[in-house]
Each structure stands twice: as C-alpha cells, then as structure tokens.
Image (tube, rainbow, N blue to C red; front, side, top):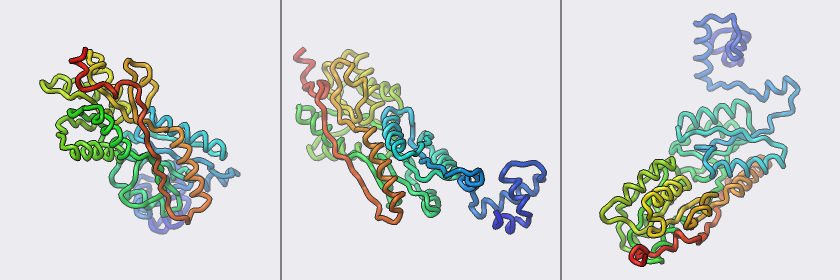
Length: 334
C-alpha cells in the first residue's frame, strides 16, 4: 500500500480508503489510486487482514473446474473435500464455464483471499496468467489436464490410453463404422481422447467421417447422435467420450429404437449407465479417488514447496456391461 501511495502521489490513508471502499475520496483520486494499483499489480492481502483480527490463517484451498455440476467434477470436489477435511482445510470452488476470463477472475479472487493452494481443471490453452500467482508463492495442482509447459504438479487419468482401449474394444467386436461424440477440444482430456480415436482407426485403415466435438450438454449430444443415426449409411457403433455425450447418445438410441442394434461405449462412468437397457459399457474414471490424490499432492507440495514437480497418471480399464458388446450385424440377427 505504501508503494501504491508513493506512485499515486497520495497519502497511505487515501489508498486505504480506496481499497476498502470507504467514502471521502474524489473520483479523480480514486482513478489515480486504481491506476497505480493496476501498474503495480497490487492485490489486497486478506490473510493479513485476518491476522489483524487474530485469525490463525486461511487453511483453505481453491478449486476451479469448468463445471462443478458435472458429475465428474462433483466427484473430484468430493474427494478434495474428504482429504482436505482430514487435514483441517476447507475447499472453496467456483465454475469457470470454460471461459478464460472467468477462470482468471476466480483464481485471482481465491488468491486475494489467500488460499494456501489451487486445484485447477482448465479449458484455457493459455495459462500464462498463472505465472504471477505461482511466483507469489501459491502452489497449483492441475487435475484432468496437463499444461503445455510445466507450471505445477499434475494428477490425471490416461485419457489417450482410455479412448484407445474403448476404440479397440469396438473394433474387436467387428465394428468398422464408428462415430465419435466428444467435448470441447480446448479441454486437454477431450483433445487426447479424440487423438486416440483417430490414431486407432487410422492404424486399422478405417475412415472417421463421424466425429462431432464441442458437445457440452446431453441435449447437444442427443441432437448430434440423432443426426448421425439418420444418415443413409450410418455407423454401427458410437464412442461417447464424456458422460454428457453418453447421456445424449442413450437418449438418441432409445428414441430411434436402436439401443439393441448400435453398440455404445462411454468414457467416464455415471449412475445412469447401469439403469438403462442395455447397460452401458464404459471406460471409467474414479473422480473421488482422483480428487483425494490431487489433495494429497497439494498438501505434499505445501510441505515441500521446492520439490520437483510431480506427474501422476492413473491407468484405465474397460467395464463390459452389454452395450459395447453388440455386434455390427445385430439388426440383421433381430
């Protein structure tokens, strides 16, 4: 605050009034102080404020997923909460909606409240804004993604391996026409899954004319699947590379009466997968365990801030439940 006061050419009390939104400062002086704040990248230290109120510290961590309502991220949140509670910490969460500006605002808000660490699941390809926060000493763990450059610890599933496993599973059952339904390609997990699908199909000399990405809701996925199923030459199998995509695919198949004729494999598990007929074959993640491991990684970082960054990649498996084992000639057999 002294630096801001000096650069703005005002008193320390004037700076205090501006940052605490107190009356008694003219608009011109307010703008003068705000300009100095922006120039110096000043941010209020809520932890220092808390200490003045005899607080013992924040003991909080901030979680920034794209959508905390998504079953996958709500599971990660639960795992973070469970592990954090054991350490006496509270988890604060906010959804970025895959909006880079909202993500950055959330991170800055959490850092302003002096969370002791960040857990980030970003859809932002440019994470350079985080460098300043990391340099200020706030550690970050990246979950479900891997930044282009090393900026912190990483905890994620093997997205490429899981999608390759799902694709090979369908090919082993004789399918040659497979459609792909996926999320936004800005997401690391989605880009990896699409890349694996294309690689496996290409390695078998198979075309991939049915690739639809950018699906963020079950309704969008349903519309996309319905359009594919109406084609004169349609695929014999669907790979739904995200839980919302699987929900939409199931609705489309049921609406067309093709759920026992078109094979379906989903990536990410969900409660509904065992409640439909046929049950959905999936390559699951364990989001709660992923959240717990992420929290453990963050607490290890807090204990050893100078240790080398770590990367934890969880292996994947496929659960056969029936939908992914439908042969390509199922309609003829019926």
